[in-house]
Image 1 (tube, rainbow, N blue to C red):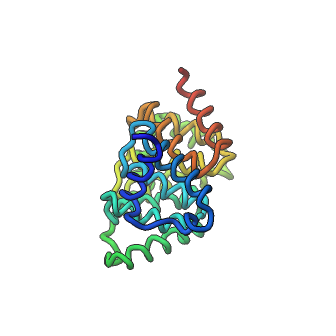
Image 2: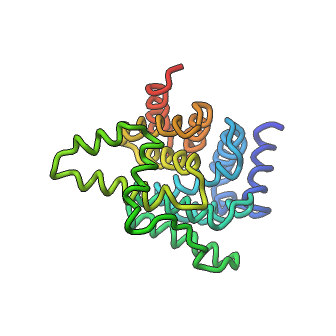
Image 3: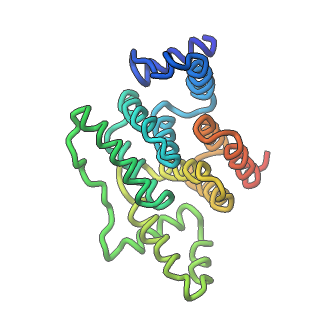
Length: 250
């Protein structure tokens, strides 16, 4: 298949027989979009459709492009993602985007679930309790980043130690330990979110190493960042790839 044929097949798989509104008003632009995203990028690398749609969801949440987020929530269900997988990907955004942007994304997802007759709330994926969230989170941090985490905690200035506690208990204890998505997928989504944010190269590099440590190889990392390209543009994509090559030289 050429890229035009590929784009039609992929678009139908994701969105059914419907057409984008811009097909009528801006057909040239819609052709450029569809042929690049669905005819080229979707066929580059080693990701499955479910992984691609989870990445798309968190990047759209990062960008706060909510109409597109809603469309891809439908697409995510269409390719076989479960409501729990979708919701957990959005929850994973909170430590990186903040609560307001994550709540905006949750509202869009909930509208889609309501349209699709998916009962809310979903089954809880909580895996920690108040008394062990810090220890559980620290354990996940060390699994992802190694013993350097303990050194970072020890070396933090006294007036900033609470930030280290928040990282361990909140980011990794409250979120990374949840069910619904495995550690490899959560870490890959985090890398995509941070890459999409821009201006966080040191964190991108840290999470490139974290992805390696949990079993995502360079080809998978590059595939994920490539998939982000149509949604975040070339500058942030190239910055992220530079971070990847800095940590994992060719």
